[in-house]
Structures are given as structure tokens and as C-alpha cells.
Length: 506
Image (cartoon, rainbow, N blue to C red; front, side, top):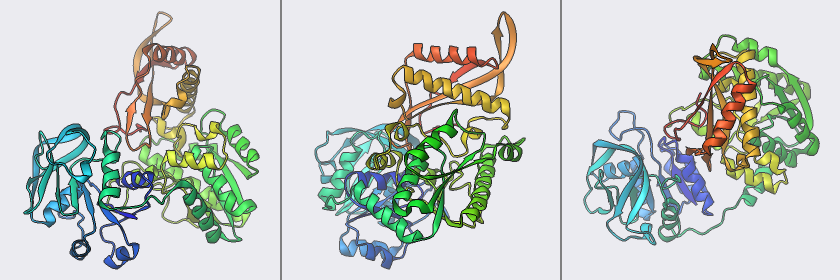
């Protein structure tokens, strides 16, 4: 059992997920968790996450001194990452300050001293840094383990307390999983006792216990997460679950037929609500995407409340997964964007919400889908945001904008499938920009629309790289979009990774 203490990093939940991926149970807690509660968890080790603060900020989160004393008394292994490294240095009277050169991205570090955490690794390592502060003076009795060109104290230790300035949990740190593996099994001496089968059995049991003989509805969008959440919940409560599909008019092409097929295949009670006019009216004139998310989240909930009363349901099941929770912010983390099923929820909700997948990442959700026997065509869909195409246009929601976005995305997907690369990609979709540019159509000047393509490769959506597709394929896609959509005269391609850009640009 490993505890991950969340100091606000966008990667906190990824750390926890990596630990589970290595076969060890992990749980996330906040730094203000009481010592008695931590003791009851009986951890074999503790990981301190990164975070957006400087340790000297007025409201920066810290670890209580009684927890530190207990860690030292019991000799519990600790691994501090980024901000966690700064916390360790500060606690033991080291000195932290602003770095003259901030490090964001892949950096080379040199291992200065052979140690268990670097066992089996070469002296030079490529790691992912993301920091503006650095340790200027090492605490007494600590020893340097690794350095970078800009950061002398990039890794250090004292007894079983280890610190890394970089993020081993992200894929850009080439041997990050090996470092975490060494911490878990060579330093904490954990045993492998976690797998997805155990998670499924426990989750089904928890849902059954929570809902009992009562009824629930699930917000079914047809995407990977809600589809798998629906089947998982149906295993727990059977016919007491009703799948509610809300046609907002903001969905992908043929989405409704696709969702109905899922429900028939898994014998789910299915209810379709046509709410296009309602959503378009509420979104009229709104261009800010955060506002769109809030409006859509509110409307979804009010529709579900109404339908729940008809079904005598007391619970609302949602397909929320970890990246949704992370990007919507927490008690210690910044909000990147609100998700309609997390940060977009209104304050007053008459239904009790259950999110059976909220501790999982997309690939873990897909693994559950395979174990449930869900077809690959559903499991391997590309992610689609709950607010739909409304957050893939930078302008207001209207018939023209949504039509362009829907058709361009459909063309893109079909061409990628024909080329045999669609399922190798994490996500591929079109974004319709509000700006217009000059084009030439039939020897005439035309002031037309811009469609930007976002195509990325990723494992868990916490980091992503833009896909370096064949130029001929991109040219074919661009030509088809401009030929079939007369409003469009320009097709652009996003070539930024995550970070700094999020996968969904709006």
C-alpha cells in the first residue's frame, strides 16, 4: 500500500495510477489529512506529489510536522517529486529559491551516486522536468544522487527519504517506471497484490451495496467511459438501471443510432431525450467555452433529475474518469478546464451521484471493457467530451458551426480509418475557428472558415504528442474537407504537445 499525498500537481493521479500499474495498491490523500487516518492506512511508503506553488508562498500546502515525526520514527520510505523535493529540503533546513533558468520538458541528468532507486540504470538519463524553483543548499547529512546542467541537486536522499526534481510518472522520463519500480520493491519492499479483476469485483459489490433495491439512471453518451460504466453498473443492479441518452444536437455523426445499438446489445433499458432546441437556446450567443461547459452541465443535470423522477430513481451514474477530475481542479490543484460531469455540475443536484470509474485512466477503463466483453468498436473509440461539439468550436453554437465541426470530424475519422492509422491514435478531431481567412474558389475570392485538426498520440491523456502523420495523408484530408464543405477554405494542423497545449484546444 502506497499513499500519494496531493500537493496540487496535474500528475498526482498519474503517480497513483503508475503505482497500481506496477501491481501495488495506492490511494491519494490531501496534505491536511489527520495522522491517525494515515496510520490506519498502514502504508509501506509515501510519495509526495509535485504542485504549482513555491514552498515559500503564503498559502502553499505543507505536510504537518507530526506526520514528518511519525515518518522518521517509523522509518517509512518517502519519495518527493518536484514540489515534493522542495518540501523535503525545506523541512530539513535546506534552502530553496528561484532558478535562473526554468526547466520545462525533457532534460538530461547525470547519476552521481549509485543507489537503489537508480539500480539497473545508465549514468545518463533523459527525464521530464517542470519547475521554476530549485534547491540552492542541501540539508545537512543529505547526499546528492543526480544533477542536471541547471540543477545541481536534482536528486538526493537521507536514509529512506528520496527526492527527484523530475517526474518519473510521465512517459517522457524514459526510465521513470524503473525508478518507481525500484522505490516500490527495493526501498519500500512492497508486494504485488493489485489487478483490474480485483477492482471490478470490488466496484460491482460497492455499487450493489450502495444502491440496493433502489433505482438509478446513467448518463449514456455512447462514448467509451459512459458505455463501460453502464455495463458495469448493470452487472450490479440489473433492470434497476435506466440508460438515458440526451440528444443535445452537439453529438458526432450517427451517435444516436450507435448508442441505441449498445443498449440493445447489452439489454439495457434505454430512454432517448431529444433536447437539441433546449441546448441551442441556452447556448445562444455564448462563445466562452468554460461558460458553455457550465451551461451544458446544468442542463444535463436538470434533464436527468426530471427523468429520474419518472423512473423513481435516486441515483445518477456517470462515466467520469481520472483525467476529468484532474482537469476540473481539486482542493490543491488548478482548474485546467471544467468537465460537464465534474466542474460543470451545478451546486444543487437532487440525485446522488455515483462515479464508478473516477479512479481510472482511459486505458484502464478499456481494460475493464474487455473483461466485460464489450466489443472493440466501442472500447477503441476516440475520447469525446461530454459537452460535445460545443467545445470544439471557438464561436457560438449555431447550425453552421456545428455542421462544419461534425462533418469535418467525420471526414477526418473516415480518412484515418481508410489509411489504417485511426486506432493507433489517441484522438483525432476537427476544431472550427471563429476567425476567417481569404481563399480562392473557382477563380473567385472567398472569405471562408478555418478548420484546425487536432490529432494526438497518448497513453493516458495526461501527456500527449501531436501525431506526425504522412504529409500526403494530411493533404488528402485537407482537400476532402475543403471540397465537401464549401464554407471552409483553410485547414490547419495543431503541432503542439501536451503540455503546453491541452488535447482539447478549447
